[in-house]
Image (cartoon, rainbow over all chains, first blue to last red; front, side):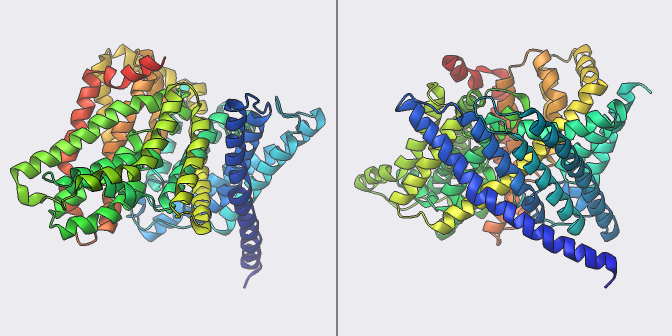
Length: 175
Length: 433
């Protein structure tokens, strides 16, 4: 085993664990909390005429956690949409090239996101930026999306091909 | 070099990436960021790469997406669909083609809760196909009716495609939901009428189903109750201005949880499966929307969007001419792309043109959803047909596509009605306003 493949295997192991942990956080933490908060707010608003002033901000942040924490897992499980009509008919070499190009395109976005979020996190921490109604600092959430972006980049490097749909049935979609 | 040249070069790169098979979200995001990097410099491009996901990832309107998906996933995983079909069959099972008509109506009801066409076909197909086989239904009629009726899932509100369109275009999701009601009912009636007419003319296509007494029929209403109650609660609440779509989605989730608990169909496994599915689907949609915003920003900066708007307006196609052009465009794209891809690729170009010539954005949302419905049942992609094939593996794909054909004609009929009489979609919305 060469140094590069050992490195990739390590990256795969570590990033896979991080991806699973993030996914669990989103699925069993943020998403139920989002549902709970929306419901509680509706009850307080319409039954007791006492809505939570900060619920909109908090909902937004819970949504952010739900979406970003599931992104690397969505890639690993093949939850992405591509023009399969050609892709599935490409010869193997072209398909591999398309997979590499996909990974490069994904890395470009999420690496920039991760890098820029560091700058924004520092700036937000410095200015003490908070939500409009929720007096909580926003920088940890910006740091969180940067971390998720970094994990996604690691998954794209370690697992560039992800899962490939077997047919054109729209598997993995909910349309 | 002129900015617009960069813009068109970006469009070419985007199409090449898509044709190669790069996931739509990545292809759009990459084109958008690389384009912004070239025309505006690295700093703005990097800032957009973080700011667009940050802003839209906290958008209160987008909370609607995971909550409505969760509602549908809970309903799907709790297995509440069989009650719906059973109840409807008691009422219409004895008319010619009655089971197929019941499946159309049940798909409409199931779609009203899940907002998903594919889940509707997979679920209702599994429930209805064995029964239609037992009663010797013509396989082409049975599979065609189910695959086509699944599309009601995205027209009858709440619908994920409406939410997606609403988020992309900043059109009121509540108004879109209300606008989908009448076209959805007309489509259901059109499909039922097609089945009835074919089975009256050729009775062996769809024999009569089992007899049900009035007592059985009346007691079946109780089984239809939860879906009807959820629909009234969600859509009635939005229509009356009591709930925002986001709040209605939350209430809908609780409604499904309570119903499933009462029916003793709620398990930890079903809740976990629903949560997992919801997170993955929402993340996928979010990635597509972020990609769409990035590429739209690039196109706006380069002036491509304005150029296209001006060119199409200068062509003086008129409302009907433009819509016919769009019908052709969506047929072509629907043959190559998934529904989300079809919308996210076209909306940044098409929406400004449509609004510029005075077409109501809400009406256009309904138009777009009907085009998406057609894409779901026409070859070569026809996702619903592929799902139906999995449910009925003994029926060849060609048979299912042939079975769907009369319903495609029916759907085109609904589209023509919608173009000729826009009030079909807008009348209820006007009442709400």
